[in-house]
Image (tube, rainbow, N blue to C red):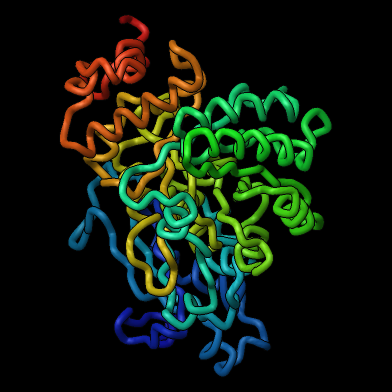
Length: 438
């Protein structure tokens, strides 16, 4: 008997408070027996190996064995297989005992996608957690409402700008640019992911210069600006960098989440002395999620796991700009960041990657106002200058909030900065910004 009753169970027949349920997409050769395949997956990741071993007693299996709680072939073949069938596709759901992993990411991911990541066409689609397990994670300290409270902005979408050029600016040059960006009405400015604590622009020097410039701009415009300083680097000195940055005046931080590691990010978010919001950057996420048949789903990589790790806001790529990203993946990511999730606060999505003022109407129409519209070149590369780039975004947002279209708003002489941006880059849906033939 190659499958015992302990192994194959109904999802609604187990005590779900004891298990994390992993959902996979698998593609196998047509000749593979699906139950044997799923059995091998669950056993490899829990109590067993390719042959029985003495220590795998019934008591050990009862407490630690993974349970197959769903196996669905798509399309489903019952009577016979087509003669030319070469591959079969399955959705597999395995319940992994929480006791095997604990409230941490390193062993969680090892448990659900460790050795089996070498099984070929196998993709981890989702993870479902018991309420008692989620309660062991703090999640975002600030989240959407906390960020709004810090900025004093409760209704409209926020605007972000990323410092450009990506590398090469020293602390004073970064500060000069940050001053102009803030003065234009941008709410959140971020370091580029390629700039952290390098010799040409040391972190603490940058914090001191930038925050002095931000304070001057805020006094002039009568608003608050957050600047997320990238503290990515060796984990052994990560907390120290964060605390030194905050002591030097930093009012927000940024991490390259997956190159740094989820547990390191959780350490920062859980620390009561790190009392500023943290931005999650998309670094490495494409390598972990873009294969259609292997690795992890884009929802887990971009949204669900960083949110569980405590990130307050996160950049996600959009389908509008310079990176290939489907609208389906984009929409799912946005809702994975904001949907209700027990004790875990929503984190604020920051769509970017070629976003311009011409996308304001589209983004607000799809997702409402709890978004941070992220732009690099559309602010710093505005035809009328950096300050005008920020103003153009604010003018467009204000117009849409009033029920106007962007095209209508351009007719108002007071919105000359918005008009210049729209003249340069267009409105989404009217023409493609990246159409090289235009």
